[in-house]
Image 1 (tube, rainbow, N blue to C red):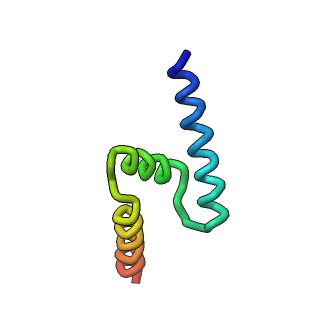
Image 2: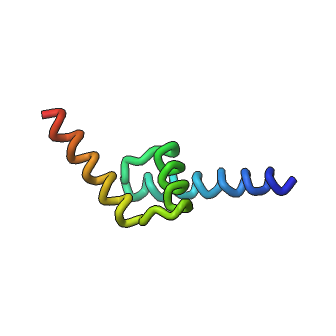
Length: 65
């Protein structure tokens, strides 16, 4: 039963983060947000993660030219 509660809590957290992400127009979908949360929970530096996401977007934009 505790696992069900944890799973529900995780889903609600991702839903809330997704709502906030959409309001801030981050362009991150639920799957990407879930991956980012998991990485941060595993010890990744949030600022470094944000910098990597920004750099990947710049690379994608450059490749599209």
